[in-house]
Image 1 (cartoon, rainbow over the protein chains, first blue to last red):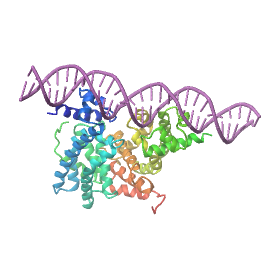
Image 2 (image 1 turned 90 degrees about the vertical axis):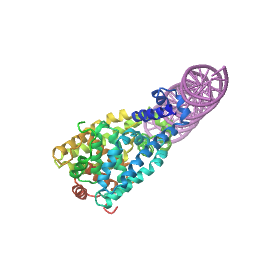
Image 3 (image 1 turned 90 degrees about the horizontal axis):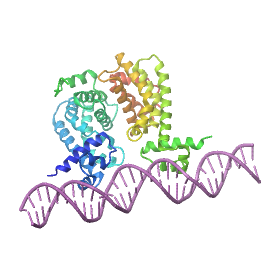
Image 4 (image 1 turned 60 degrees about the vertical axis):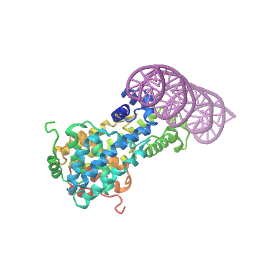
Length: 195
Length: 195
DNA sequence: CCATTGTTGCACACCGGTGTGCAGTGAAGT
DNA sequence: ACTTCACTGCACACCGGTGTGCAACAATGG
């Protein structure tokens, strides 16, 4: 039904991923549509961004709550989390950039639940002596998943390469010993082993 | 002689540190001066930012080259580097935000030399089996000092707290074992032990 | 055939930030 | 007292992006 609307959302995600400062005009033409039409679906730029963010939050919290239910060790859970959430993180990498600037406030608010889930996971790991305790769980989790997004935003973004890099690096900064980290990602079922 | 100019630069750094999107007007009034005066010293906003960046690059390369001359282990060198460069990184934390956006190109160019020095150091550490090799030196160094800047930008920014957090966290993600990392920062002469 | 609905293509107002021009003013140096 | 120089306080043009209003248009489907 809302074929155009969905296309706008998808394209907007891609365009903003390329350049977070892209205007409504850029998004519109990239979606093969006129600027006016975009405003027909999203009264303001903020509406667009908010909708995008809500999408991301929904997908992430779904994964996170499901995974958090398992009783695995925190570090293994983290690995599972990155593996499952990586495609999402990569698609929504723009949110990293958008958290600063005009809409930072709104986005930060929406991302709140995700942040909490993440902090809980890290805290569990710290309590179980699996993660380092040199920083409070709230901050450490932010830094760790900030790095994941940063890698999602870099050259080795797509493919298994990026996922592995993100997982290992974040595990390391969480205080997991290198050997253990590598063993953990080795266990992970690689979707495409050759790549 | 250029008392006003210097003040503008200092204030600009502070203001932009607070809000990277601050306009020339904000900077001017924060410096107790009229917008027109700012343009008298810096023909364009880019000039201002560039000058700020050049300052930062100068200070950082000075520290980096000096430290790199020592023949200490790479991880110890890294610790020294963070300790020495921390106040600078904190003051110039705005550059992290400015690397994205309008002036990203220019800034990135100016920051090139620093990036190289850093990559060299990390590569040395990898070659000496002190740092992890799960990522190429260029990327790993970027991530590591990205985290340092991120912490410089966060709550625990100032004081010894932030410096320690930044050092330990970056060491961890460089692949240094937790025990070794903590030992290394323990060795560091804390300027204010009580804080 | 007609009505509804979504899209189009304008034009327009508005906003905030940038950068410029120029005549004034005041203080410091000679 | 006179010049110089930095700063001031306007006004102004310009730009790009946002958001709106409205008439036209095409497709869809009753």
